[in-house]
Image 1 (spheres, rainbow, N blue to C red):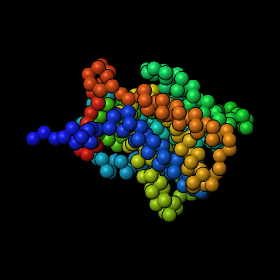
Image 2: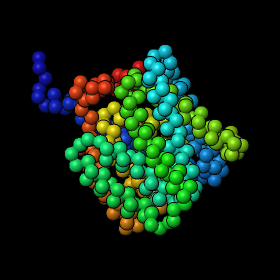
Image 3: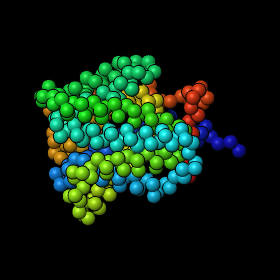
Image 4: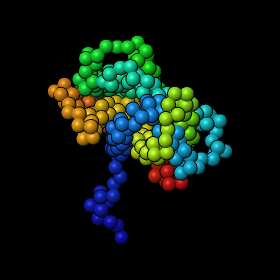
Length: 311
């Protein structure tokens, strides 16, 4: 007996663009909440110590929970996972080094040049229009004209931007070729090891057991969960669509600042929120990855993410 037409409609799955967008927004929200909660720890552990411990805990958690088997990886896939771990660590470490030398808004605006570059180079009608609107919103949000530019700080921020662009492309490459979350379970321990090596000479001597336990919770909230969600989102969105969608992150950071830190936005920031939200809506409508063999001759069709993740 066939089901009524309304029942068929109710069981229609969400579009890849909508599902990927929800995952990306959830990822950005948990990252910003974790950063807001980490503010008091930076004074006690230092920027590098906080970043290194968060990455190390995230890598260990994923390694224990997923338990990837290296024999399941091809040499090419393994190299891509290691590269993803290196750029993930570089992105987080370089950004933390930038914000110790630049105003946070200036550093954020410079770092976002990475995703904007991915968006500008990607396919899709109206891509330049949405990217330009996101750029206007970012300038309004961050107001970089209020602070000077330190050359070393600008260099670190631009390095973080390059790492962020590479992270988007490599995450999509690994997600398309490696089953489930196994690629992330290899790349994050690499990032954690790099983070610890960078932080060890300066900040790890301040670690206490209570701080270590606190960082475990923050790693789960602001590293493991966001990276997993981004990993899955990039299986459903184009890299260029994902890059433009990341323009929502400054707006989410502004909301987190209001709710957690009591930082109220000014008129320019409010206008910037409107711009980046509109750009994000544009990215949602044009950023879904095509499925099937025609999607990309060099990559497999979109996998069954739920089944892969459950394995």
